[in-house]
Length: 76
Image (cartoon, rainbow, N blue to C red; front, top):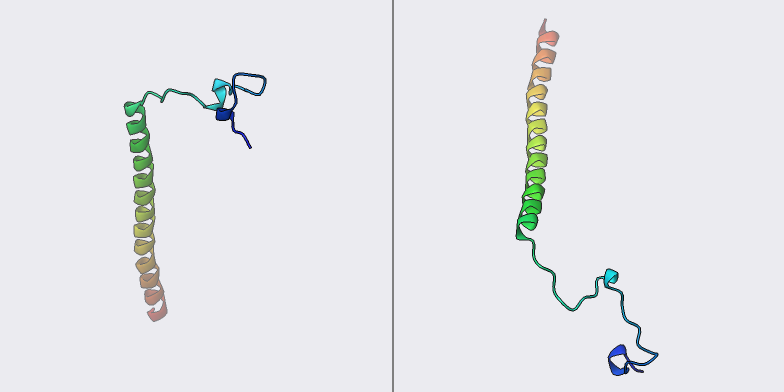
């Protein structure tokens, strides 16, 4: 079985178009964009954790209040 590298520049050769992502040169890194994307992801994760923490805190505050009113209503 022969691969593309084994074939000469004859009829068998089918060049890959550049829009398939096959290129001979590496891409130029865009460090600023990549850093901003990492920071955006980190900020989203931090916001999600902060929201979960706030919800947990609110649930903890509501639970003792509910128990306190139940105790007061039962004794009165």
